[in-house]
Image (tube, rainbow, N blue to C red; front, side, top):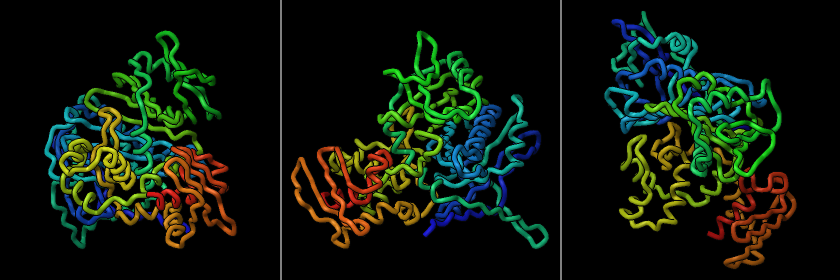
Length: 444
């Protein structure tokens, strides 16, 4: 049965209009969560660098309207988290292989945070076209929501805008945070090195993988891997950053420990734009399965309520402090951090190397339902579909029911093996199969 898209309806459109000589960028917002959707305005204030902010938002719009796989491109609305003196925009390409986040830091904005929360925001063509015309000397106000009460009459009704968000888009917002949390800084490029590097991106739609490496004082792309190189699949996706090269102070390059996914952070001082790339153009973050292992143990409801009550959007999530205050083992807290991230309650900031709180604007049951392998694993457990042959501290062997056959699962330390087609085809690179998940569930 196909997963249904989430329908989002905006009561109005986002607009960039001029009033009294000042540009006002008013973003219409909507959430599946009623308590968030009912907030009229999250932030209202001035942008200290309207031109740079406009350029970054336009880059974000390029990401959310792009596609590098078989899925046709379409303009998908990003989400925005407002609170703790900063605003973060997040979005995905239509193919879910490129994730972008714009962090407007405290020095980038000067205004009032009326409420804290995460919500969908309307990106539309007229607003983006107006952003493209913003000049350096202009003054601009940003509103996440409207600071005025809009009254609709029979003669002047607002045209409701309806959009749909596919399940893979929502799933990607949880999956990508776990990849970011596993990344480490590899390279730091200054402005000159950055511009020189991007001049070396091969033209056209190049197939195969490339590697970013340093030769003397210069960074280059090469089809040949070296010991310290960063692997980049679908290198043409980096062209999404081209409009920002002359504005960035530096570029930070991160790579996931598995050596596949990579992230590029353009640092402008008062704001940062992160571009994360899945291993290849044909592989989206939403198709990755590392999120499932963190969902084996259900997060207690009291923890979800506690995090919602303790933290505001964008506030750093300090696991050490929470461990001490709530008498939770540090190892258990690491698992809980990954679990909270996998259900949309945490994002990950590469700059601070910490999770931050942001509750996705989607119902929890929707997020949990987006993982059929997890659902099937729970069914195997419920129907006694797992029989242990051997179960010791160092070695586990089990027979697990399949489609008309029994599969053998072996777990030895941190190594997993299953005789099913999923494991044979992907060798663990796309997450655990339902058979291994079921064994891990029963083994605690």
